[in-house]
Length: 117
Length: 108
Image 1 (tube, rainbow over the protein chains, first blue to last red):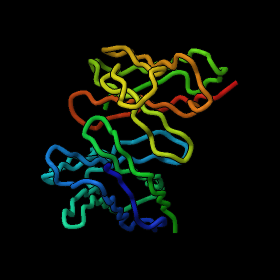
Image 2: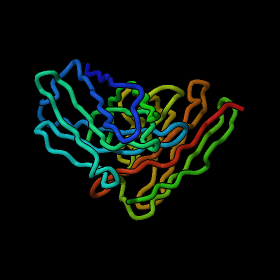
Image 3: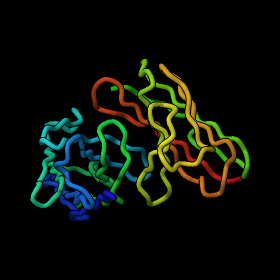
């Protein structure tokens, strides 16, 4: 069965770039029809959809993050990556990767990222 | 963006009670609505998709209904393991998809 695992630094300084990786096991990220989505949750708050990438590498980003966000695939490592530039304290959150375009049936366990100097 | 408003924000009920959560969309989203359960420290889990379809493996005490702008999520008989926060999520037309603010369910 497909499993997802997020990884990355737990602490990022303001104005720097947040880089996270989602490693997919139990299946290929380039299998036809798969979408890989990033979602975040600010501490004690609700969920925010960040964006997705499909198995061909096409992406769709939340317009609120558009100018700072890159989502990419590394098929050789079976990984999905998220890069968010110029971070501020408002980017402090748990970041999840999930499988799906409109409904998310498989999630990683999430990784907490704190933006602080 | 489409705004999703859940109510109540929290509730307390006894084991065996029927629990109902509502979600209202700021515009017509047809039946493009999901419900998730999130337990503390865990990732959300998909329970209901397309407003009323039960995800495989989810107990039948969970159900969803509604279309257009008004949706309901029901737990027919609350169990101790149902303690969690529940979120609705819309996926009408184009992203960004948006979530409700969540409803925290506790045992009385």
